[in-house]
Length: 356
Image 1 (cartoon, rainbow, N blue to C red):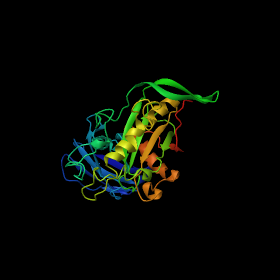
Image 2: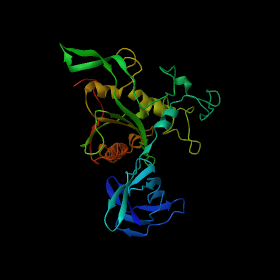
Image 3: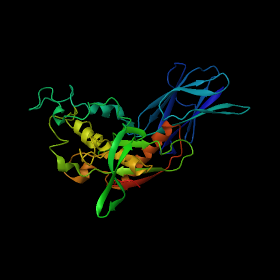
Image 4: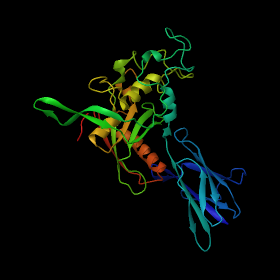
């Protein structure tokens, strides 16, 4: 016989706010044989070939139910056949008396919304309303012409740009702004993360450079949180157009409307031509991070249009973003097979378009 010990963690701390059940070789899910503090313990037969672990958090919908499949090995080990990154790889503790399988699951309120965000960058489609003057079924194609076709085939990587005008360091020389042309190719990953239980912001666009290490043994993660200027100054011309994508149940445009994704983060992460001579409104934030040679993880909250700034971003207080950055850091480290759960946050309203 063997035993399986399961533990849940929230933000790196063990918790009992999770119920574990398992199914062995296709049987019905069963409760633990015993519970010792924060560990759920199951007795496993020696001939078990497949174990499906189900972790059901008590706080729903903040955390979601997760499942993974484990397979005991002939040599006494165990492997995870399939399952999300929230599950750590199982380990084995063997004593003369008993073989113990150990596994930990990390409960996270963060959801990967990258593919859905990419789809939201489609300016046409049947999910738009038929409000005049747009022809049915309505769309946002009037925002064009677009520099490149939308939706993009891939939003997780950034393209190489040659001869991007950047401010030099020092920025002023002989009473004039000093600039130079740089070729920039941000090396890293872009993702859009959803926190569905938040009022605003519910979405965060994230750029994680390869220069910021992740994985076991790395130190604190440096974050730069970029706050939008107030979105209310652009409404209803932007973000609140009646022709934009609406939630069919609530009628709300935030957070999945076209404008929120196109103007809310896509134009902030990319350049549509040289920022000095063609389009100065695109921010190209990952390119700025690259040009500045600053190894920071860029986080862009997508606030919403509302009647007052507090409702646009209810978590405008920089200290309130620390839990979200912690979730982002933990999720990225788990995807790299679990590192130290630490971070620090650098909060700014402007990342200067400079090097150095």
